[in-house]
Amino acid sequence: MLKITTLIITSICLLASCTKQDFEIRNLNGNNIKAFGHGGMGHDHTYPMNSLESVLKCLNLGMDGTEIDVQMTKDSVLIAYHGEELSYRTNLEGLVHEFNWSEIEKGLYMESPFLGYKISSLEQMFSQIENLNDYEFSLDVKIYPAADVDGYINTYISALINLVEKFDLSSHVYIESQHPEFLARLQSQKPDYKLFTYPSSFETGLQTAVEMGLYGISIANEDVSKEQVETAHKQQIRVMIWQLRSIASNKEAILKNPDIMQTDKVNDLLRLLN
Amino acid sequence: MPFYKVVLLFIGMLFSLNSFGQPSNEKIAINQIFTEIAGIGGRFSLNYEREFLKNNNFRFLLRLGLGAVHLKDFTNTFNPDLVIPFALVAAYGKKHHLEWGFGQTFTNIVKVDLEYGDKQRQSGLSTQFTLGYRFQKQGRGLVYRLVYTPIIEYNKYFRHWAGLSIGYAF
Image (tube, rainbow over all chains, first blue to last red):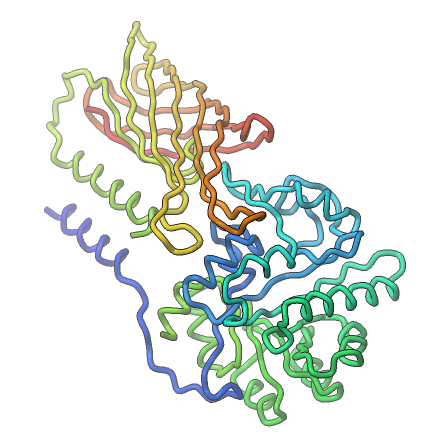
């Protein structure tokens, strides 16, 4: 009898899930938090981060948008991929900028047996999303420089602008970078783009954002407090929080009043906010 | 209901079965049902195994499973991926067994057709091997397995993999 009772209680606990909670949100986004996936469905999902399947699943679940990690191939094609090394997640070996797109598009994500989803270019991705302008995207620009850093950054910026303009996405994308020089050059060409600095600490991020007149700061949950978010808001700087890998961290981040959250637990965040 | 919850409930049912089982295990059990975490079914699978030959301490079994990675596809529609492992297994021992085997896993996975932007199902066959430990009494009762299960995915990519199972023999 005890075993049956335990079984029933365990089942109820398993089936019960977190539900909507009322949060009093105060931010620069009309007091609403924009809910983004992290590379689609996040780090630990069976759809690999940044795969087209992961991004589509995230958007189809009802998220406002998603973060996408961006890298550039040797022939200047922007692809969606997270790590520096391709072997980290795929059956290829080497760095993204060492390969042409024609070589990378043959690669498969190998994180789970039998799944083998393909690596996607951003052009492919945006072409496949229905009602693209209903969503927003945060493009996390990864720069792993080749020999000619200067030329590499200029080419990267041209490729990015071409992509954004081709899909008429300028008001639907946020561009994040750890590289102030990249942000400065992009800003000089496209002052209306919404740029986020991706700093090592909140203080340096706020200073960079204020000095350069950026749109916001993109920062890990553990590196920012509610008070710091408020400080940024007072200076009209948006805050995008990431590294949200649990229900608890989703809740914790909501209480800090960010403008955008990039979560690895998409379903949980949707339940909390909707 | 997410697939992992189905698996956990299934494990719970197995424990319940054991609690209702008769203390005597005289009858030889030739059927097994078990759930496997990872292993030749990918991430999770439910399996049926039938012993078709027994010779002293050798058992020979056929195994058929069903795994599903996603029950809903990326458009959030019910459209499960199919993972169907089939294997021929041998086990040596009385209660503690050395187990080895080989087989094929058929997969049918829903992906994006990058050319036309639609869903497409991609089918494939992968070769898998099993080597490991199995705890199983002669009669009814719980079965435990811990096995190394290397997979040659689509007969191209080698993957080290392993599985952990709990099941019931009857």
